[in-house]
Structure formats: C-alpha cells, structure tokens
Image (cartoon, rainbow, N blue to C red):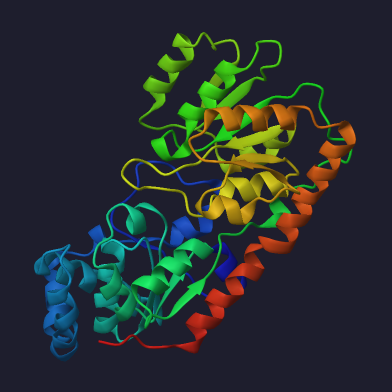
Length: 372
C-alpha cells in the first residue's frame, strides 16, 4: 500500500473490525485512513441496497453461484464496502486473500460501479479455496505472488486475467551491511509465525543432531500456536543453552538486529493441511540486509534464493538442513562476504517495491471491468 501511495494512488484501507493489536509506526498514515465496516449500520446498508436495485440485480448471478457465504451477509457487508467506496470516490477495490474479502469486494464493485481485483496468498489458495475459479473469472484481474501460484491460477482458469506481482521492499529502510561483516560468532536466526509450515521441527532436529562443539546458537523470533510444543522439544533435546525464544518483534527491530546474525534459517515446507508460504518477505529482508539465507526448495523460496545468496535443501529433511547449516558455518571469510554483497545486489535488482508495483498500478489504471 505504501508503494502504491508513492505511485500517486490514494489508498483507503477497509477492514471488517477494529484490530486489537497496535499497528507499526510506519503505517500510521494508513491506519488513520482505515475505514471499518462495523461503523456502518445494517439499516444504512439496507437503504443503500434499495437505492441500487438495478445494480443489485446485476450482482445476483455471482452471489447465487458462490457457496461460501449466505446472501444476507454478502449483501449487507458488500453494501457497507460500496458505501465507503462512494464516500471516498474510490474507483477500484483490491482485496487481500481470496476468501470472503474477495467475495465481498466483487459484489461491492458491482454495486458501486467500479473495478475490482484480488491477491492470493497461501491458506486461501491451497488449504481451503472457496469458489476460486468463479472469483478468477469475476474479478477484473487476480494477482499471484509467485510463479507457482501464477501457474496454478492459469491451470485452474485459463480465461482469467492474472498478473504476477511479488512482495517487495522499501530498500531505503534497509541499510547496506558493512563490507567487513564476517562474524566469528555465528549465531543463526529464524523469523516467522510459529506454525507447522515454517518447518521449525526440522530445524530443531538438525541442531540436535550436530556435535555440541559445532552447534550454533539459534534465536527464534515470532509467536504462534506451536510455541509450547517447540519449547518442550528444545527441553527434551537439552538445547536450552543453544536456542532462545525471543517472542514477537516489529519490522524496525528486524532491520536493526538482523545484520548482527550470521545467517537466516527458513526451513519452510507444506503443512499437513496444504498450507504454505508463497513468497516469504523475510527472505528478501535478510538479503536486503546482506544476511545469507538457508531455506528450502519449496514454492516461492526456490524463486527467491539461489546459490549466490544462500543454500537450499529439500523441505522436511533435517539431515539435509544439518548439512546446509554446516556448509554455511564453514564458509571462508571471503566466501561469506561475497555472498553477503550478492544478497544485497539480488534485493536491489529484484525486490524493490516501487518497481514491482508498477505492474499493479498500470493494470488498475487500465480499468478493465469484470465480467458478470
């Protein structure tokens, strides 16, 4: 959204409810602009629908064909979105996640007479896709965040208008790492939500299997439902002196602290329910800060990391992960510093948000209207 602001778009974030958590300070402008559906009453939404009878009828074919939401909820919440869109003279709706948000955005766009698009992420595409083919056809265009997702969208719906836009970085926030960045103390870091698809089980197993004199320290940054189980695993493996759980940290902490680590380890994999990371931003953040990466040959990871900037292994393979950690730890000072510099070059060439979002901006500006 910040990149789209820099392209000259006016952004009005719309969300269902007021969040409990605080937003990050860099997003204060967007937070102040955010509109909440709960601020518009059912009566206001109903009156709006009665005044848009012709457009309302045009939405019914899509509503009746979708299967995830009941008609009343769709109409009231879509009307709320349309009211906000008209109040702020919006001419395009862009939904994040292909679940209910996209359903409502498609209906709201028809009520308000504007264009619509959506972006897929992970859970919404690969675990519980809801009417995905219908949405691909109904939206003006859809955004895939990696090549594999792009291919999956095309295979599912060849007639859809699909573009690929990777998640990018504001590189001016990420200082260039000092050239003499080799550290004798080779601490590793993991950053992410503590869930199955992050592959932390395999990382802990890999460290457990290493001889103690070769085993690096690991800091785990993040929160999530697996925290108690992971802490117990660390205790059972007697790794308390090697592995620390630091809890949640914001993006500024990452920018300030990540360069002090030797390598980022991101052993991402597919969860048993099919969930996966499709273009992990943390890999790009590490590269922007000159920190080499250990990750897996999986989904978006394999597109982001090559042998110049890190090491990739098979997902869910603790032995291979142990090998990769050992290989990274044994790089010479020169090899490590060359890899660090190439990390930054990779980020500069491929993941600048202002450049990546040009395609999104131009596609929105082209104003392609969805079909019914």
